[in-house]
Image (cartoon, rainbow, N blue to C red; front, side, top):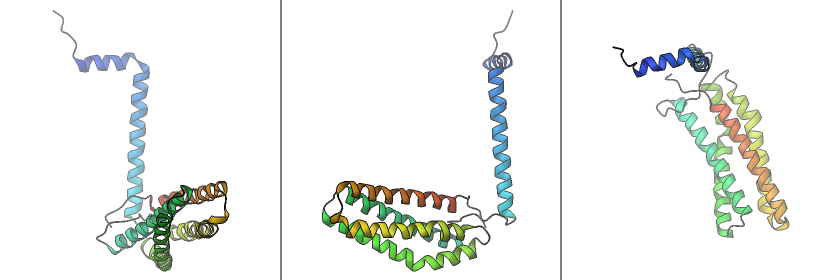
Length: 193
């Protein structure tokens, strides 16, 4: 009397007899192992202090600083997008004015705190290169966007539709670029330090 093979035995036989499945499993195991080793190495660098992570844990001063920086930056980027898109869509004037005021408020908060952000990055993320990213990459782009936003606001009536669309596209592309820079700034995992 022969016994019927179990599902596990069928699966093992399929893997043994099919080199493609076996290869895929081995490659998968290698990728998973490499990922775990890389993650462990990264964690070790953070523990010994060679790599500083961006911490938005509200329970620490560093976390509060980081959360405020991120919140203010994203708020500014949000209102840049909203205002420029309302201009592109020729939204009612009161909606454009509301978005402009919110953009100005967000810009004022950002500008009044920028030196604190530089010093905070030096303090909380020393030797991480984060201040340099903010100072040399992000802030100059915010300044460039500010110039383009003022042109859009105050030269709006003199621009034809094509130029408005081009100006808005230029602003939106710069915001996308800053967004990518911010992900570079905050891409590291949080630690319990």
